[in-house]
Every structure is written in structure tokens, then in C-alpha cells.
Amino acid sequence: MSDRARRALSGRETLVCKAAWVIIGRLVSLSSQRLAATLVAFVGGLIVSTGAVAGTLPDSTWMPLPQLPQQGQSPVFALAVDPADNHALVAGTAKGALLRSADGAVTWTPVHQGHLPITTIAFSPFTAGLVLAGSRGSGAVISKDGGSKWADVTGLEGRDVRVFGFALPLIAAGTDNGVYISSDGTDWKQSGLQKTSIDALAVAAIHAPVHLIAGSDTTAAAAGPPLYDSTDAGTAWNSESPPISGTVVSRLVAGPLPPTGNVRPLIAGTNAGLFMSRDNGINFTPLSGGDLLPSTDYTQAFFVKDHYNRFYVASDGGGSRSGGLWSTGDGGQHFSSLIPPIQSITALAVSNDETPVLYVATFRASDHSPAMWAYHDTGGPPQGPTIGISPTASSARPGKTNGGLFDFLRVLSSSETPYIVLGAVALLVLLLAAISHFRGSRR
Figure (cartoon, rainbow, N blue to C red):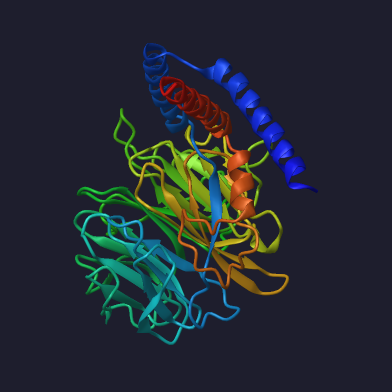
């Protein structure tokens, strides 16, 4: 091509570009006053859109967490989160080890090594930094600094310690030899139900006289699973046989006091279902069966902060595929499945927040695969774990993602997308208008 032809072609391209810009300029050109008014309107719209986005709950996403050091193929049955710090956790292994995390279960530090499986871990809601861990056949250990340093307790040597319950004047423990009581968690004494295997324990009244309710995993001849009631801090016990299904009691949890009345809601999990009592265990209402929850083995239950009608329940399925994790915000009238990545839940810890973080241990029996997860429950619909992250190798922090195409697609499919698109279009129009205005002012 000759130089003259190239100059002619370049001239035509310039004319086309100028013509195109004239068209755009006429469409979006504004006077100074109109430009200022447009800017004000845009800022106002941006504020409104931001408020709308803030009022829209984002999706709650399951995030995989790293496996515990030297965990192998053993499931985790004991997990607890510090009520004063939702990133501080203590976990126990089947090999007797206790590990502590200060960063939301991203990294773990071994803090105690025992010889028998850890069966329960519990933080005191009344004494800062006090945490207890029970084992299968080796008693319990105590920490008074949030789980960094541990010491043996006296009075529980050789016992299976399955559960702890906290009241203001005392701490109770359920064991394979009844209930034990301690004033500070260090020294323990037997307090009734001797030779009775206690697997579940709840404190129905935390002030003196302390009201305790215990459940056994020993099959009883009477109808219904065995329950025991003490209204004098464990000195005397009454045997109860409420008409609920199941043969053993696997979980008892007393919730916060409701706005009216002085009786705490009581959740009872058996090997055949979930039940609630509002009269200290005299009568129970079934929460499972029919269109509610599956009739399975419920081993985990946690109330959300000070809400008497908002709680989580979980099951390992009792060897079946009917395990899972559910939440309710209306006292058990309706439940929503949180759709965990693996249905068999072996341990659960819930942070002390209005929008809590759930730390979950699961176990897949088909290949003996344990895993740990974090779920920040914002109230939005549950989403699956991030694509491409292995639960045993991930180092992602709860609430963080690793970016990439999946995150981009998730943003596009989220409820905030219309506001994002609207803001982008408005910004583009304002930018073109400003450019056109300043180009025109130079002529």
C-alpha cells in the first residue's frame, strides 16, 4: 500500500472515530449544572444501592478446614469454641491429644497429650478461660488459660467422662459411674446415680438450688429412655421415664430463659429422635418424625447466644445416611437443613455471636475420611464448599475464598448482582458525560 493510500485510510478512520464520539457526546453531553445534578443523583443512588446491598443477607458458605495434625483416619468427637473469642478453639483426638487454635481452626498447636480418646470438651460460660476435657477411661484435665496449659483433676481417675454442665456455684460431670460435682473443676466428688452410666447432662437452673437433669445410655426396662432429675445440686435424684421414643439419651441441653417465665427450654436427643420440654422434663414435644426432622440419633445441640428459640441440632446418623445439621429460629416449629458437605456430624462447636460461626467435624464411613469445616451462618441460603479445595489440605480461613472463576461466578449469581450492574452502568454513563463535557469546554 502506498503512503498516499495509508494517509487516506488513516484520515477516514479519524473521521469515523470523530463521528462516533460526536454521537456519544450528544447522547451524554451535559452542561455544568446538569453534570453537577447528575453527580448528586448518582451519589444518592449509590447510597441507596449500598443500603439495599447491606440489607440483603449474603449466602452462607461451607469452607473446608485443614485436618488436625497427626489425625489420620480417626474422627473428632470433641470440639469447643471459647465463648469470649470465636476464633479460639480446642479439639480432642481419638489418640488422646488436645490441640488449640487461635485463628479459627486454620492452624493448630498441640497443648496436651493423653493416652485415651477425648470424649468431651467444654468452656465455662461463667469463668473466663476455664475449659475442661474428659476422656474415655482416663478422667479429665483442666485449663484455666483458655486451653494453652492443662493439668489433671482429682476424683475422676479411671472414669469415662462424657459431659460437663456449668452452674454458678458448681460444675457437674456425667460419667460411667453417675454424676460428679466440683466447686471449681479441680477437685471432684461422686454425687449420686452411682453405677449408672450417664451420657447426657443439662443444668436447668444455674442458681442455688441448682437443678440438674441427667440421661443414661443404659437401656431401661421401663417405657422410654432413662432420665434422672435433681433439684438440690445432685444430692438426691428422682428417676423419670417420659413418654419419648428411643432407648438411650445421647444429648441434653438447657437453653436461655424466655422473656416470660423462669423455666428454660430443654432439648433431649435420643437414639430415635429429638424432643423439647418447657416444664423441666415432665412433658416433651417431639421435634422429629413426620414432616419435621428425621427420626435418628441426635448427639449435638447448641442454642444461639441469648435466644431461647434459636438453636442448632446435629446427628451422625447412627451409622445410617440420615445424619445432618439443622437450624431453627422459632423454637423448633420449623427447621432448615444447613446441607453440610458430609452428613455424618461427629462434633459441633458454635461461636457466641448473633451470626455465629459453626465449626463442624464430619466423618465419611465409606472410606474412613474425617474432615473439618466452618460455616458462617448469616441467614442466607447454604452454599457448598469452594471448588477445588480439599478438606485435608486447605488452609483457607473461615469467611475467606481463594478467588478465581468460581468466586466470580458466585458473585454473578448472588442476590447483590442487580445492584452491582446498576452501579456499573450509572458510573459508565457519568464518566462519558464528564469526558464529553470537558471536551466541549475546550472548544
